[in-house]
Image (tube, rainbow, N blue to C red; front, side, top):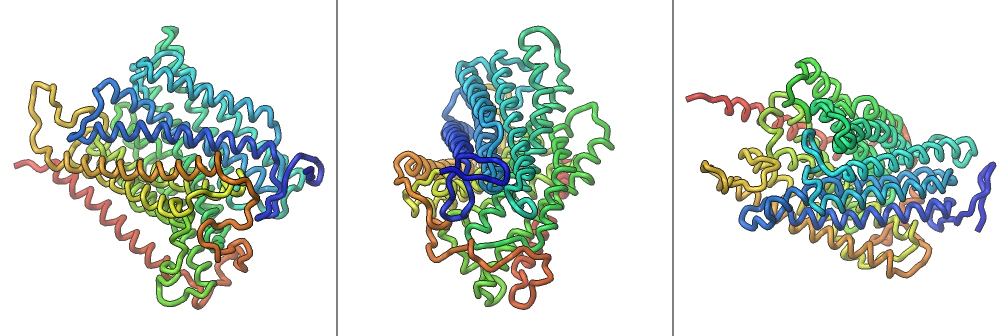
Length: 572
């Protein structure tokens, strides 16, 4: 059917749940990018299983060459391909469906999709051919085949153009008055993610283009120059994920319990803090590098970076508080945590939201800020504590949030009935529980001194012996068991999604929630407010208690690391 905005007609349909227009061209692009993302999540997850079974010393599955080969492919497919393709789908969704608007430059959008896909295939083929065993970072003077760098450049340029299509659509929607009032918070957060993406992708170009010419023998690249610009891409790319993930948290809270921000202006301000300060966190990858002064390291990894941490702390309070207020409005007002006890725990979006936030904050956030401290970083950076840390925010946090929202995109965008809803209900617990073991096992192994990148923890082929690795091997075993559980959870997600998309019955959705049929959050009487309207039984007292418990845990972990640092220099 044809629908129109104030000044432009476009082919669309009307969503039966939200009443919003859905640009059919944008819908196809959302589907294409989302399905491609999930395919490479499957591929990267398979590589992850093989890598985990190799680091698990009892199994030690892969030989050294294939370990580093798959580590390279796994890093690219999981940290870049799966997440960025999904984020592009999210950008198009947030700019068109949420804003009731049309997608501008659809042919350009399809062209960028092709660029990203071709670049992805080039990188994977070259890596699996054994021509780029340089791992995700590809540090100079390590050199890969020129097609490896060219593939990454194609992917990055395609993603950058997709971001500009998003910006153009946002501007056009405002000009054509596709929506009234302020931009929805979900889309606002995606705008922040897109701005960070421009910085990250340009940094990647400044790193990879010279590396490409160096691989052709046309120029030399200074290793320090490369590392600085690479982490402007490699770490900032994860900050794109952060802003997108938080936007999805707000969306999942509204979808599952009808929650709205307690103070929306404060939530928007937290996104601005991300824009101003989040990329400074990239410097913690360079703290062990010579050539950077103490003042530079201190400013980048402490005072200024903590303003970005403040943004995360605002969201960490705002979202649970919104959930609590929404639940208390429904009558769950007994004690501090009746609202949490009576929450829709069988709804996959809600469990994904809670587990994602918990893993991101309690594990990923706490460990990230701690090892971003220069002195502690010296003892932690090249150990398994680093992958243990980033698997918590990126895999447990971002990936689980993306999984959670996918369950609702299937009926809303793909218009397919969700298959295996009970499996979907259990999937976040399986995946999140497995990743909890993975992160804790890696962090604990790192505390025992296990190297983050070495193929064999026992150094079996070395002329020297290594003693005292019993505890470390136990921790790697825990991580290996966790990987098996997490892969099982990931497989459950794949079964539900692929079965629903390719074999599910096509029908228009009649509600948002998937399992809890008694919920109808879109007709909640809750409205955004400044906090002044909240009083009495509606006050988020339980969230305040949880917040102080988190801060106490944060303090305890942070200062225990200083205690461990003091023991490292003990002399008998």
